Image 1 (cartoon, one colour):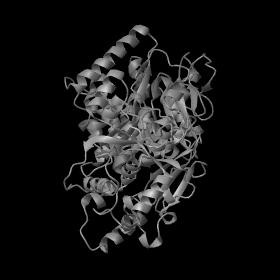
Image 2: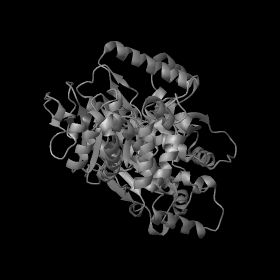
Image 3: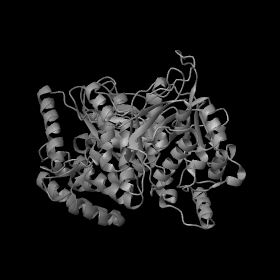
Length: 615
């Protein structure tokens, strides 16, 4: 369905293509005050869809959209972000591709401030330096698969417009969006004749600037009226008019998506859909993962809630886990100690420091940092386990972010679906996004990265499970010490240990230096008191039970995090990836993991891990 305009074909499409985003931060008090002031003096009732929070709320969608762009459409030239005197905190404006465009640069001062997306869209062709060929996107639109320039422009350099399978019918639409679309279509049809009687696909679109300028001139009065209105109203001209006008004039190609022939073609060719738009609801996100569309939009609506938005952010973080070059470079240093006690392939990079625990008691030399250097408690390793590395990190590292992991248990910052490896590949740190950029990106929004909680099915509480497995007198005394030393934490400790059955295992986490230092000071003080009381009889226990302080620390980390959450601590839980070198055991664990996923989804068995949002 291509227009025949007699233009010489551009077999070599060497023209640049830019992209334009609209963005605002509704959490900004200055912006909110401006919006509320305009609403007070507006003097009439406005449609909820025009003024509700879902029209303006941002949840870092732009960050992930730019990550998707760099991953799937790196050929895009300049990136113009149109805002109202705002800049995303994480954005690196020194990147030569990034250009911030204030509303004042494209709209007359008498029309500002504006909270009307249609008004801004009526002026995008006025952006200084914008190329003839460009794409337009809202910040909730993403690239979901590799695309080339000819996905958006044909061989003549004309834009390819995509429409949904929903027809525009001859009726008065009650919903504001439907009303504005039908009005844009009818304006073109009444003036130029038939165009494409379908709703646009509401996703990333391609345009030519010269076409928009001509369309603007043809409907100038209506566009000026649109630009003057501070909020969207029924008589505003919607951006889709550019598409209907271009097709009526023969300046573009169109495709109808979602129809029977389109779906049938995709079934036989096993191809991904060009475009998908879903209402932002937690349960619908799996559609994107399953179909892998080339473009997708997560449309916040009046029915979207905060849980849906949290699920979306988790989904986007998993889909686009690597920070892009458009984000500020890390300003904080990271050191994560990875504990080793025997020969095993060493995992090391700029942030991962392999450390030999219990080195003071071993003749082995693993060729890595030892926990018996500087200020240390290496001699206590049989009882404190990986905590000897935690102590070393606390006392001897000055990194801004610090953390602990095990050589066979690693935090997966990419949130992938893989849980077991028979052998870690050489690039495992890269696969799991264990790098400074990623940790800085996460800890810009959170205070601590933790493994997903283990849900104990065998017992009614953490306390009762400890009673089955270990010496409950140790945990009872720990509670007494907490009450004596830090009574403000005691109630939380009782609640967590006796009323819940979710626990952070392995004593592994990554956090700010401040959190780790405070936690370690509290932890080792409490354990030290217990040690002075019971250590003389610990040697009489079997070897497994001698690891008492390591076992207790898992419970204490869970308690401390819960207490800090009451004070505003923001946590990020990620999956844990395991390595099992015994092939037979590895195969069994793999099979068990697959079965576990199936039977928990079917509701046959309760979950053992708090794997949020279907990860």
